[in-house]
Length: 221
Image 1 (cartoon, rainbow, N blue to C red):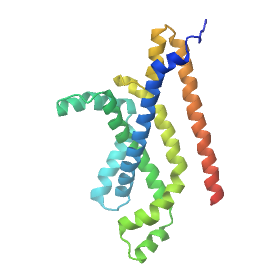
Image 2 (cartoon, helix red, strand yellow; image 1 turned 120 degrees about the vertical axis):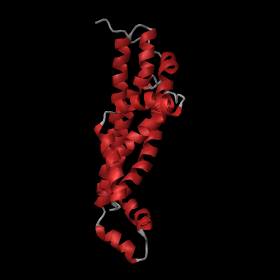
Image 3 (cartoon, rainbow, N blue to C red; image 1 turned 60 degrees about the vertical axis):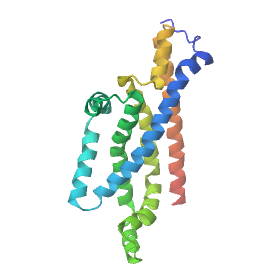
Image 4 (cartoon, helix red, strand yellow; image 1 turned 90 degrees about the vertical axis):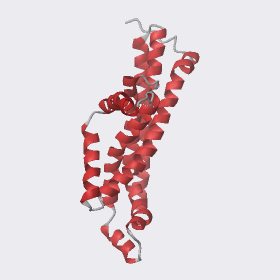
């Protein structure tokens, strides 16, 4: 194969790739924050012990974790506009879909983290007069967060990789930027190879940072 990467100058990258990279980062950040908030709520509902709260939360988590993300993206993008009577656009569909989908995974991480805190901590909170919300907010969640921080960050790395799936609805992400550059210069093979290298470099660097963080937390303990 006659590969030629000379056309991938900084000007080409800034014109085609930078916009997609920024959107991928934005989508990752929004989905991470929204997913953690909603996932924490789902985890607390599942741990509440009340069937009226446990069953809907469990059904939501199990449904989302059982369906491929690309199918959820397509369902939301195609069906929701029919229900509300107007299109949402690819970007807003991606933000909402990723937040709702990732919440199911963050919920399981949060639930495992909360359950990793000794039960005696909960009883201690009740003993000093705290209610369930105060005990979770002030006693359990701060300890659980340190336990599950490496797993949360690892899931966020996976989330960044999954942002490439928004190609299914035409959103302009990092992979779409490389694809457009390849089409304009008739070099699709080179741009896909470079895209793979970029994804690998970003995700492997973040994974090493997470491993270092995990080692530091282990030393503190």
